[in-house]
Picture (tube, rainbow, N blue to C red):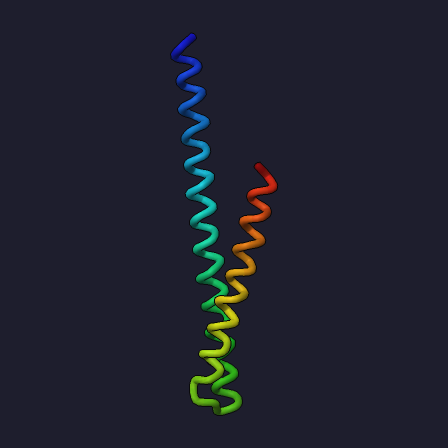
Length: 82
């Protein structure tokens, strides 16, 4: 009986670890994708309007803000599931 209880505890422990690692990976990917998408949008705007990298800088900051908001929502949704 003791081995069964220990096995269940280990399974629950590893499940929590992998859920946490998955959340961290998802947060990282969310930030990177938001920043990269906004970088390419800024690059296109720079090319279209002939700006000197101003669009890239502005849109990278917008990508950081958008990524932070998306990560916040993701964390809140994850917190509500528990």
